[in-house]
Length: 250
Image 1 (cartoon, rainbow, N blue to C red):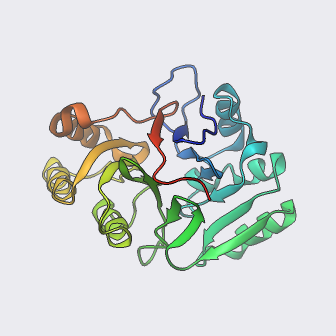
Image 2 (tube, one colour):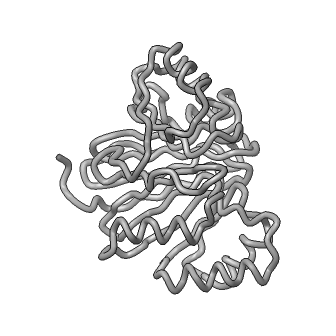
Protein backbone atom coordinates (compact mmCIF):
# COMPACT_ATOMS: atom_id res chain seq x y z
CA UNK A 1 0.00 0.00 0.00
CA UNK A 2 1.36 3.41 -0.96
CA UNK A 3 0.91 6.03 1.72
CA UNK A 4 2.46 9.27 2.82
CA UNK A 5 5.59 9.04 4.87
CA UNK A 6 7.72 11.96 6.00
CA UNK A 7 10.86 10.19 4.80
CA UNK A 8 9.71 8.31 1.69
CA UNK A 9 8.39 8.71 -1.83
CA UNK A 10 6.25 5.83 -3.07
CA UNK A 11 5.40 5.23 -6.72
CA UNK A 12 2.57 2.81 -7.51
CA UNK A 13 1.49 1.75 -10.99
CA UNK A 14 -2.32 1.70 -10.89
CA UNK A 15 -3.13 1.11 -14.58
CA UNK A 16 -1.21 -0.96 -17.12
CA UNK A 17 -1.64 -3.75 -19.65
CA UNK A 18 1.11 -5.71 -17.88
CA UNK A 19 0.50 -7.03 -14.36
CA UNK A 20 2.77 -7.33 -11.35
CA UNK A 21 -0.20 -8.01 -9.05
CA UNK A 22 -2.52 -10.47 -10.79
CA UNK A 23 -5.42 -9.51 -8.50
CA UNK A 24 -5.61 -6.19 -10.35
CA UNK A 25 -7.30 -5.48 -13.67
CA UNK A 26 -5.10 -5.11 -16.74
CA UNK A 27 -6.14 -2.95 -19.66
CA UNK A 28 -4.31 -1.03 -22.36
CA UNK A 29 -3.07 2.25 -20.86
CA UNK A 30 -1.00 3.67 -18.06
CA UNK A 31 -1.36 5.53 -14.77
CA UNK A 32 0.79 5.85 -11.65
CA UNK A 33 0.39 7.47 -8.24
CA UNK A 34 3.36 9.34 -6.78
CA UNK A 35 3.04 9.80 -3.02
CA UNK A 36 5.47 12.25 -1.42
CA UNK A 37 5.55 13.82 2.05
CA UNK A 38 3.97 16.92 0.51
CA UNK A 39 1.54 15.74 -2.15
CA UNK A 40 -0.31 12.89 -3.81
CA UNK A 41 0.08 13.09 -7.58
CA UNK A 42 -1.73 10.99 -10.19
CA UNK A 43 0.19 10.73 -13.47
CA UNK A 44 -2.17 9.81 -16.31
CA UNK A 45 -5.52 8.06 -15.86
CA UNK A 46 -5.45 5.00 -18.11
CA UNK A 47 -8.16 4.30 -20.68
CA UNK A 48 -11.20 4.08 -18.39
CA UNK A 49 -12.17 5.22 -14.92
CA UNK A 50 -13.78 1.93 -13.81
CA UNK A 51 -10.52 0.00 -14.12
CA UNK A 52 -8.47 2.82 -12.63
CA UNK A 53 -10.72 3.36 -9.61
CA UNK A 54 -11.07 -0.39 -8.99
CA UNK A 55 -7.31 -0.86 -8.97
CA UNK A 56 -6.80 2.17 -6.76
CA UNK A 57 -9.35 0.83 -4.29
CA UNK A 58 -7.63 -2.57 -4.17
CA UNK A 59 -4.32 -0.78 -3.59
CA UNK A 60 -5.92 1.35 -0.85
CA UNK A 61 -5.33 4.57 -2.75
CA UNK A 62 -8.44 6.71 -2.38
CA UNK A 63 -9.01 9.13 -5.29
CA UNK A 64 -10.03 11.76 -2.72
CA UNK A 65 -6.42 11.87 -1.50
CA UNK A 66 -5.13 12.93 -4.92
CA UNK A 67 -4.26 16.64 -5.04
CA UNK A 68 -2.52 16.98 -8.41
CA UNK A 69 -3.12 15.22 -11.74
CA UNK A 70 -0.62 15.34 -14.59
CA UNK A 71 -1.72 14.17 -18.05
CA UNK A 72 1.13 13.24 -20.35
CA UNK A 73 -0.69 13.46 -23.70
CA UNK A 74 -4.15 13.29 -25.21
CA UNK A 75 -4.32 9.66 -26.32
CA UNK A 76 -7.34 7.88 -24.87
CA UNK A 77 -5.27 5.27 -23.03
CA UNK A 78 -3.81 8.04 -20.85
CA UNK A 79 -6.67 10.50 -20.48
CA UNK A 80 -9.66 8.13 -20.71
CA UNK A 81 -10.15 7.84 -16.96
CA UNK A 82 -9.86 11.56 -16.20
CA UNK A 83 -13.56 12.42 -16.24
CA UNK A 84 -14.38 9.62 -13.80
CA UNK A 85 -11.55 10.62 -11.47
CA UNK A 86 -12.82 14.20 -11.48
CA UNK A 87 -16.31 12.96 -10.58
CA UNK A 88 -14.77 11.19 -7.59
CA UNK A 89 -12.60 14.18 -6.64
CA UNK A 90 -12.92 17.63 -8.20
CA UNK A 91 -10.63 19.28 -5.64
CA UNK A 92 -7.58 18.79 -7.80
CA UNK A 93 -5.28 20.80 -10.03
CA UNK A 94 -4.76 19.20 -13.45
CA UNK A 95 -1.56 19.93 -15.37
CA UNK A 96 -2.01 19.73 -19.14
CA UNK A 97 0.22 20.79 -22.04
CA UNK A 98 -1.04 24.02 -23.59
CA UNK A 99 -1.42 22.18 -26.91
CA UNK A 100 -4.29 20.06 -25.52
CA UNK A 101 -7.65 20.50 -27.32
CA UNK A 102 -10.31 22.63 -25.67
CA UNK A 103 -12.57 19.68 -24.85
CA UNK A 104 -10.14 18.74 -22.08
CA UNK A 105 -10.43 22.20 -20.52
CA UNK A 106 -14.22 22.05 -20.76
CA UNK A 107 -14.22 18.63 -19.07
CA UNK A 108 -12.13 19.92 -16.19
CA UNK A 109 -14.21 23.10 -15.87
CA UNK A 110 -17.48 21.13 -15.92
CA UNK A 111 -16.27 18.97 -13.05
CA UNK A 112 -15.44 22.04 -10.96
CA UNK A 113 -11.73 21.29 -10.96
CA UNK A 114 -8.87 23.58 -11.97
CA UNK A 115 -6.21 23.21 -14.63
CA UNK A 116 -2.80 24.70 -15.33
CA UNK A 117 -1.36 24.82 -18.83
CA UNK A 118 2.24 23.65 -19.13
CA UNK A 119 4.64 25.08 -21.70
CA UNK A 120 8.00 24.40 -20.03
CA UNK A 121 9.49 22.41 -17.14
CA UNK A 122 7.18 23.06 -14.20
CA UNK A 123 7.15 22.21 -10.49
CA UNK A 124 4.19 19.98 -9.65
CA UNK A 125 5.08 19.57 -5.98
CA UNK A 126 8.30 19.58 -3.96
CA UNK A 127 10.52 16.90 -5.56
CA UNK A 128 8.07 16.34 -8.46
CA UNK A 129 8.42 18.15 -11.78
CA UNK A 130 7.24 17.88 -15.37
CA UNK A 131 9.67 17.97 -18.26
CA UNK A 132 7.27 20.28 -20.05
CA UNK A 133 5.81 19.27 -23.41
CA UNK A 134 8.28 17.57 -25.75
CA UNK A 135 7.80 16.55 -29.37
CA UNK A 136 6.23 18.28 -32.36
CA UNK A 137 3.10 16.81 -33.94
CA UNK A 138 2.16 15.11 -30.67
CA UNK A 139 3.37 16.84 -27.53
CA UNK A 140 3.93 14.82 -24.38
CA UNK A 141 5.22 15.60 -20.90
CA UNK A 142 6.88 13.22 -18.46
CA UNK A 143 7.46 13.32 -14.71
CA UNK A 144 10.81 13.73 -12.99
CA UNK A 145 10.85 12.78 -9.30
CA UNK A 146 13.83 13.73 -7.13
CA UNK A 147 14.81 11.08 -4.59
CA UNK A 148 17.82 10.41 -2.39
CA UNK A 149 18.82 7.63 -4.81
CA UNK A 150 18.60 9.95 -7.82
CA UNK A 151 16.00 10.93 -10.41
CA UNK A 152 13.04 8.73 -11.21
CA UNK A 153 11.69 9.48 -14.69
CA UNK A 154 8.11 8.35 -15.39
CA UNK A 155 6.89 8.30 -18.97
CA UNK A 156 3.39 7.85 -20.34
CA UNK A 157 4.16 6.64 -23.87
CA UNK A 158 7.49 8.32 -24.67
CA UNK A 159 6.29 9.46 -28.11
CA UNK A 160 9.09 12.11 -28.21
CA UNK A 161 11.60 9.26 -27.73
CA UNK A 162 12.70 7.74 -24.44
CA UNK A 163 16.29 8.89 -24.96
CA UNK A 164 15.17 12.48 -25.65
CA UNK A 165 13.06 12.46 -22.49
CA UNK A 166 15.98 11.24 -20.37
CA UNK A 167 18.24 13.87 -21.92
CA UNK A 168 15.68 16.54 -21.00
CA UNK A 169 15.54 15.30 -17.41
CA UNK A 170 19.34 15.26 -17.33
CA UNK A 171 19.45 18.87 -18.58
CA UNK A 172 17.01 19.86 -15.82
CA UNK A 173 19.17 18.14 -13.17
CA UNK A 174 22.71 17.90 -14.57
CA UNK A 175 24.33 16.82 -11.30
CA UNK A 176 21.79 14.15 -10.33
CA UNK A 177 22.09 10.42 -10.89
CA UNK A 178 19.28 8.74 -12.84
CA UNK A 179 18.01 6.06 -10.49
CA UNK A 180 15.19 4.70 -12.64
CA UNK A 181 13.28 5.19 -15.89
CA UNK A 182 9.80 3.62 -15.85
CA UNK A 183 6.55 3.59 -17.81
CA UNK A 184 5.81 3.33 -21.51
CA UNK A 185 8.87 3.38 -23.78
CA UNK A 186 6.92 3.21 -27.09
CA UNK A 187 9.05 0.43 -28.55
CA UNK A 188 6.36 -2.08 -29.49
CA UNK A 189 7.21 -1.93 -33.19
CA UNK A 190 10.96 -1.35 -32.82
CA UNK A 191 13.49 -3.85 -34.13
CA UNK A 192 16.02 -5.56 -31.87
CA UNK A 193 18.75 -3.42 -33.43
CA UNK A 194 16.83 -0.22 -32.65
CA UNK A 195 16.10 -1.37 -29.12
CA UNK A 196 19.74 -2.27 -28.46
CA UNK A 197 20.85 1.18 -29.69
CA UNK A 198 18.40 2.80 -27.28
CA UNK A 199 19.65 0.62 -24.43
CA UNK A 200 23.23 1.70 -25.19
CA UNK A 201 22.18 5.37 -25.19
CA UNK A 202 20.39 5.02 -21.86
CA UNK A 203 23.34 3.28 -20.26
CA UNK A 204 25.66 6.03 -21.56
CA UNK A 205 23.31 8.57 -19.97
CA UNK A 206 23.80 6.77 -16.66
CA UNK A 207 20.34 5.21 -16.28
CA UNK A 208 20.83 2.80 -13.37
CA UNK A 209 17.54 0.86 -13.43
CA UNK A 210 14.65 0.45 -15.86
CA UNK A 211 11.02 -0.67 -15.55
CA UNK A 212 9.48 -0.59 -19.04
CA UNK A 213 5.77 -1.39 -19.30
CA UNK A 214 2.60 -0.40 -21.20
CA UNK A 215 3.62 0.32 -24.84
CA UNK A 216 7.25 -0.80 -24.46
CA UNK A 217 6.59 -4.15 -26.15
CA UNK A 218 7.59 -7.70 -25.23
CA UNK A 219 10.80 -7.67 -27.29
CA UNK A 220 12.02 -4.45 -25.69
CA UNK A 221 11.20 -5.71 -22.21
CA UNK A 222 13.10 -8.91 -22.96
CA UNK A 223 16.18 -7.05 -24.21
CA UNK A 224 16.16 -4.62 -21.27
CA UNK A 225 15.82 -7.60 -18.91
CA UNK A 226 18.80 -9.35 -20.49
CA UNK A 227 21.07 -6.28 -20.55
CA UNK A 228 20.14 -4.70 -17.22
CA UNK A 229 19.96 -7.97 -15.30
CA UNK A 230 19.36 -7.32 -11.59
CA UNK A 231 18.75 -3.63 -12.38
CA UNK A 232 15.71 -4.53 -14.49
CA UNK A 233 12.37 -4.13 -12.67
CA UNK A 234 9.26 -5.91 -13.89
CA UNK A 235 6.86 -3.07 -14.62
CA UNK A 236 3.08 -3.35 -14.62
CA UNK A 237 -0.04 -2.63 -12.61
CA UNK A 238 0.60 -3.25 -8.92
CA UNK A 239 4.30 -2.36 -9.03
CA UNK A 240 5.15 -0.43 -5.85
CA UNK A 241 8.54 1.24 -5.43
CA UNK A 242 9.76 3.23 -2.45
CA UNK A 243 12.58 5.79 -2.36
CA UNK A 244 14.10 7.98 0.35
CA UNK A 245 13.19 11.65 0.05
CA UNK A 246 15.85 13.88 -1.48
CA UNK A 247 15.25 16.67 1.00
CA UNK A 248 13.05 17.54 3.95
CA UNK A 249 9.42 18.56 3.19
CA UNK A 250 8.83 22.30 2.77
